Image 1 (cartoon, rainbow, N blue to C red):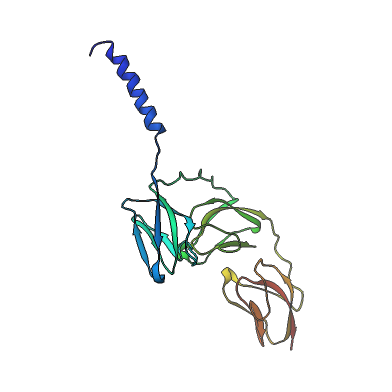
Image 2: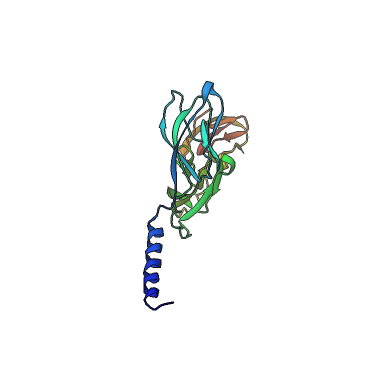
Amino acid sequence: MPPMIAPFLAVAAVAALAALASAPAHAQVRLQCESRNHQYQFCSTGMGITHAVLVRQISGAACIEGSTWGWDRRGVWVSRGCAGVFEVGDYRPPPSPPVQPGRDIMTCESRDYQHNFCATDARIVSASVVRQISRVPCVLGRNWGWRGNGIWVSEGCEADFRIRTEFRPPPPAPAPGITACESHEYRYNFCPTGPIRDVQLVEQRSQAPCVLGRSWGWRRDGIWVDSGCEGVFRVRSR
């Protein structure tokens, strides 16, 4: 190769690499899809896509992701009257920086959109999302929350949560006529007490409300709790 050509080729190669680096790393297209007569409709994109976003709803019926619209690698689907303009593309934003695991970070996942409870050893006094892993938004009070001994998730939420805990010394022995009862992992639980004449809730320990007849109650031989209620009860024996 002539000596004068080599520097020229090197400069050209550097320029080509710079052009590739500045070129768009993804393709975005807009697609209109309509559920006519409230029927299911699939709108193909003709390309493999990695994400889809509703840009504009053009129907009177609500377009709710996962309920009346969604997408897969081939395109977008709509149902129950949803019609909208969707932006689709073959680029997935880079993931958030990984969270370094530690005592104050825990991951909790709602698999197959089911309710899941992730217990902790210490008592939680606050919790927040530091990294969302699922495509489904994690909304406090709707599909995730916390209580004294753990975090619950549902409806597909998966995230890393930062929790703040406090040391809780062992509770003192209950006074005569005082009984604690807890609904573990939001499940029904029955706490036998012996013959009962009357029961009164004196302290609610859970974030979930304790409502007589709905999340707690009593019968002749004990107290029942449900839906995450944890409380301390004063029992009057027969």
